[in-house]
Amino acid sequence: MRKTNNNRYPQGYLGKIAYHMFKGNFDKVQYFAQRQVQTYGDISEEDDRTINQLVIGLRRQQEAEEREFQSHLGRF
Image 1 (cartoon, rainbow, N blue to C red):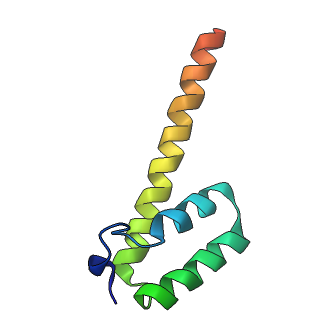
Image 2: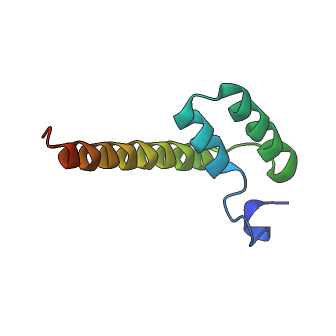
């Protein structure tokens, strides 16, 4: 079964993998990577790119929130 067959979670566990990479929870990264492989098959290069893009997006969001928080404190 491939990711396209599952409309509820079109990216499978890639979002969870990215989130836990971002948070540094590497035991959970490994867990969800294993679930991804068991459910959808091997993680492809495209999946790796998707994970990397999701991590970058989470970092950008965190940086934006941090800047907004700091501006409310009058530090920037």
